Amino acid sequence: MKLKRPHLKPSFPVALIPLAVIGLLLGIGYGVYRIHPQILLVAAAFITAILGLFLGLTWKDMEKGILDSIHRAMPAILIMLSVGILIGSWIVCGTIPMVIYYGLKIISPQYFLVASCLVCSLSSLATGTSWGTIGTLGVAFMGIAQGLGIPPAQAAGAVISGAYFGDKMSPFSDVANLAPVAAGSNLFDHIRHMLWSATPAWILSLSVYFVIGLRYGDAPVDAEPVRIMTSTLHQNFRFNVWLLVPIVLVFYLALTKRPTIPSILISSAVAGVLAGIFQKAAVVSIAQAMNSGFVPDTGIENVDRLLSRGGLTSMLDALMIAFAAFCFGGIMQRTGLLAVLLNRIKRLADRVWKLVFTTIAASLGTALITGNPYLAMLIPGELLAPAYRKAGLAAKNLSRLVEECGAIHIPLIPWSMGGVFCAGVLGVSTLAYLPWAVMNYAAVAVLALYGATGFTMAPRIREDETQIGS
Image 1 (cartoon, rainbow, N blue to C red):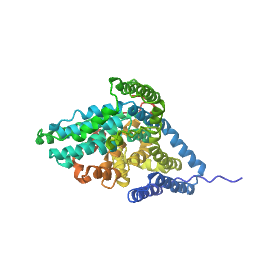
Image 2 (cartoon, helix red, strand yellow):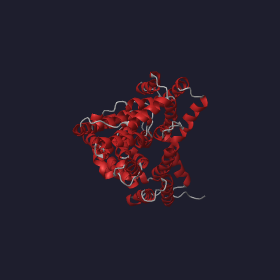
Image 3 (tube, rainbow, N blue to C red):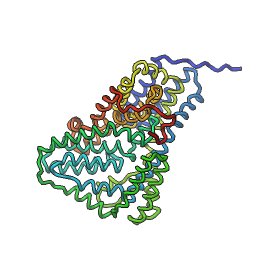
Image 4 (cartoon, rainbow, N blue to C red):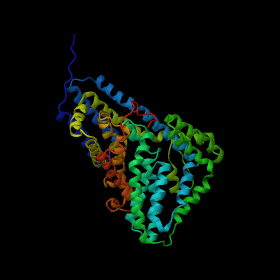
């Protein structure tokens, strides 16, 4: 009878090999050549699997590690898919267009920087897209800033701060959905917990914009871009107070701790009914919006680009990156390589504040290496989740850290896609607007303070943290 080869315990230098491999692949492959990160993560998983074979594991062993990793994330993945349906339904029924319409109405020329940050926050919160907001409303605000004589770097910073605040706090955002997947927490637990850090950073940014904006007075402004956008929205959608029902419903169900997926689907169904009543949308159009996203035809490119979102299939790209990351993480766990790294981290991060600072460094480092918000959340989240469980900390602490220290800094990195996009669309270099994107970096200081003091670092109180809970 053939004896099974014994598993070898990897040393710390050996455990560092997969991290070096993934750093090189993502840093050069994605950072320099813009190769899709999914295939790079698969390559890293493959190389790690070869290392596992030398350690005495079989492919069946490592396959089980991959399946276990995906199984743990499946509830959050299903929530992501449900959110895609919700976004499409809320746009086709007119809920999101109405929120954007009235948000634009509150612009005040005297407090332009504050108003642009507020409106971009509201739009991004409603749509779940920072890029969509920056590429539409952001462009409009840059034109208004030019007419007012406001420095473009300050205007761009206010737009980016607002857009990324709304993005990270929106239940429709891909990054807000992916952070709980990476850490093993729940979407609404994650968003509620992030209020403790995101809100102070946002208020600080608004305060800065308020003080700076006072010097520009209340000069007249050419608001033609905003007028065109609001009139287009009003012409193409019938607004009614009943369109707020899907918003009220989904947040009520979340606050009363109802199951997440049924809550989202109930709100989507109500939105579908309202689309038929108020927008006179056909059943086929409603179903298409829920499946593949809403496709507007208003005749105004900026409005069409902002509202072309949602649908079940819109989440697939993020999910493919997540699955590839789970392949890498699952093999790392099954081979024992992750355990070796975590034991070393545990020695270094034997206190809560050390674990928090380690997470901040890992998220920022991954963001700088890859320039990709998904990877800046998934890799540190997957690697450090067991360390948070061992420390008795809730997973929502980790999901908050990886989103605010990884994803939100992407537009401040000149070589990242976010940095390239914002600089190109707004016409301001990344380094020029960086000091004025206050919210994007203030949150890290808040989180570091919480980590040092233990404030808001919630303990782990239940086994299954992917379910709605406190």
